[in-house]
Image (cartoon, rainbow, N blue to C red):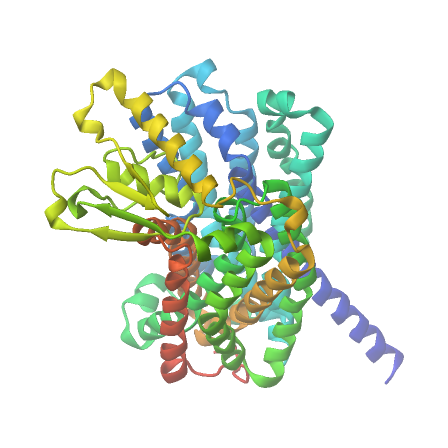
Amino acid sequence: MTNGDGAAAIDTRQSERKVILASSLGTVFEWYDFYLYGLLATIISAQFFSGVNETTGFIFALGAFAAGFAVRPFGALVFGRIGDLVGRKNTFLVTMGLMGASTFLVGVLPSYASIGVAAPILLVLLRLVQGLALGGEYGGAATYVAEHAPEGKRGLFTSFIQTTATLGLFAALGVVIVIRSVMGETAFADWGWRIPFLISVILLGVSLWIRLQLEESPVFKQMKEEGTTSKAPLTEAFGRWENLKWVIVALFGAVAGQAVVWYSGQFYALFFLEKTLKVDGATANILIAIALALGTPFFIFFGWLSDKVGRKPIILAGCALAALTYFPAFQMLTSAANPAMAKAQQNAAVIMAADPGACSFQFDPIGRNKFEGSGCDIIKSTLAKAGANYTAFTRERMTGEPARVRIGSRVLAAPDPWRLAEEDRAGAIAAFRADLERALADAGYPAKADPAAIDKPLVVAILFYLVLLVTMVYGPIAALLVELFPSRIRYTAMSLPYHIGNGWFGGFLPTTAFAMVAATGNIYYGLWYPVVVAVITLVVGLFFLPETFRRSIHH
């Protein structure tokens, strides 16, 4: 090799690293923004929703929550179209600017106490902008990196994008923990919560500066020069069956399963530890953070491996393992994290009997519904909150009778709120909940997991396994989606199934699973949601998803 060839190779490697760094750093920053709201939701709710009545507050909180997930596919459509019309680079500069500006503005937004109902309205609008921008960011970053990657290395290159959600979560957690520790809880809740949002403007400036140094992707430049860019990406992607069928296959044969495995391993596992197994929040966060730190390099490993053996077998193997092992894995997690609860579940039968017409489906995406409309709802929500396994008997012939719960030999009848005077209702419900919690404690159900009894190495090992499944399905997915669609509609076509899968199938997993648990009384029943979706993806993927890793993306 001549000196000139060696210098050219070094320049190429430096250029490749710059592309990966700029794209990944920008996406880390956007995930940092996204997670901040989730981590500080309680404080933000108190700042912006406290002055409105309960119903209005519920609507605003639901709107702010939904903006984070529900509008992402619409962002994919808007910015995917722009990316296929005007270019990858400029589009994800816009998405980053919108995300960064809306995040900074949350940090300076006056509270309800200052400007009244305008505060929650503005907050919901900013969250909508964030959700839309995030919907356009991922497709742009993945497409841009893949179109720069050498043949045979697209899985490896795009796998760095796949680490960004985890790294963004780490960044947000780290900043919040440090500021909270330095300031103290009172000052942080009063005004310090704004600092993580405000300092994001520094990260925004750095990320924008780095991305501005980049050139447009070579694939898009070639299309532009040849005049082969799409004039109507939305119509071409979704109005023509030859492209639409691959959008559907991508969603159900890859992304839906990837999404539920990802959210189960990174979010539902944390939710299960805290809400069901009663492990204190700090301990649960540390245990999941260790597992994530151990698992994160495997995003890159499986991305690299997919360049050797293909994307399809790795993603579908992750879905298959999830479907086969989630139930035993989460049962092991119960025994390791809260052995007293595991023992109580085996030894103390809890049975509820109620009129089925009085039992609502307890789906509550933002955690503000108390479910106190009937005796059945009160029992179910209390048992679900306590992490108690129970058997529910709902009989039509109980119409008019109070809902009852039996714990061992003890039977408790729930109050019917509609039979009580309004001034007596809250006291009667609180008294019943306290009696039920005492009965559960007497039967061996602990109010909290005993920190000394937690088998921390085993918990981390189980969580690491769950994260490993995440890396299998998520590491190769960007390369698969890029390769599945023609370059002229790639940004648009890949973004929509990705964000429907992750925004809807994945984003609503924790609350849907919890509603399933509350409906049945089985703390593991919510796992049927990711298991069934993973099996659907496995079947659709096996029969309809093509292998793509040897495809040229210059088409």
